[in-house]
Picture (cartoon, helix red, strand yellow):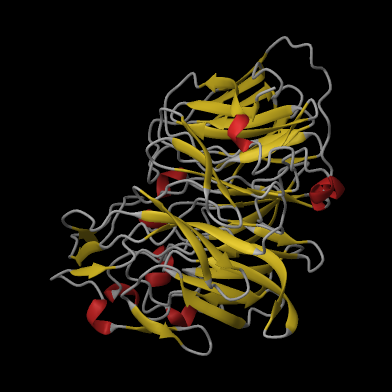
Length: 526
């Protein structure tokens, strides 16, 4: 396997370092975008307001960067002091001058031929800490690159890719550590979350999301189901420095549709886990969908906020879950506070006082099949929501479609092979979606903006009173954050499968989105 970095000549010589203090206080420098979600809290909200609801109609492309190699482009860029860092499919990293879009350096990682992996050769972004950038690879390695040159400083094997493991998410850098999860749940790979020393690559701790024998929660897996239990950690989590706590969502149990071989609740699949960042110890967990048989991953971005709930100020975590319910949990204890559907759903009569779903048995898929809502792609998926401090609203790109699903028997799974014990037949029903604004404290619907098809990309809110969104048809657009009114749109010409960001370049606000095989950067027309 070969790795290569190409350093390009540039007049830009200053590559700033990003220490933990900068990351923990990133809200104080909104001109940069220092983590996957902009800040540790997962808000994907910017305090920048140069572009606002009154002048957004003047937004025009400033420059466009085209990929050298085609593939699904899902990057969420980082921006550090006028330099943008992006991942290109399948595992390339490029540093760009934000003023011109000119590449400053490029890094290419060559993948093995026996790569497995589910759902496309994608990478969603990077982490930065001190003078290093961190990349997770599709063959389940973690790589540290010099932020100035793109040269490899260390490489660490996270898992065996021949067993179905891969990394598609951006890592999270926290106080000397780099946290990474893994994909591979659809191959029966047992999920985990790892922490590595940011300077050396030494593994510091591992938290298994499917507990083994003798560990609390193992009793929720019948027989040997835990060995191939899934519950992957394939998206980036959030972090509260004041509580020293990581919040990370987990994926579906394996097999995803037929639960006969894994009777029980199947902890900690389809859950949110709160971990001590020092040692990876579990502080609490909340399982959104016990014994999931509809592929309702819970890997959605946890959003941390301080809200008044029923007259009491609370530190909370907000989740618009793939299963169709919006949740508010106490982020110190995991206590269930609020649960409310944000899309039509037909699989649960509601949630009990602990937040556990009251399942409708007749709607469980079997060999005869059943129509489920949300469908297998969920009410939302991996793409990011946003929480606006300006409005107090939580925004989510939602899908309201139904799907016919049936289960079937399988002759067996080869080592590292993909295996579902279930599938779907016929088209999805009523393909539609909407950008929805919810009151963060109780999930009340404030407004919705209808889309022609379910969204497959994320959101961004700003202090300029805007929410940026996009469609599968390539439309990138801005809505009034308070009312949902359409204020601006641009047809990119390519499908959008990414999250937008905003930052300052030369003191001027820009907005960036990956679309098709290009990165578009917009600014105000002078």
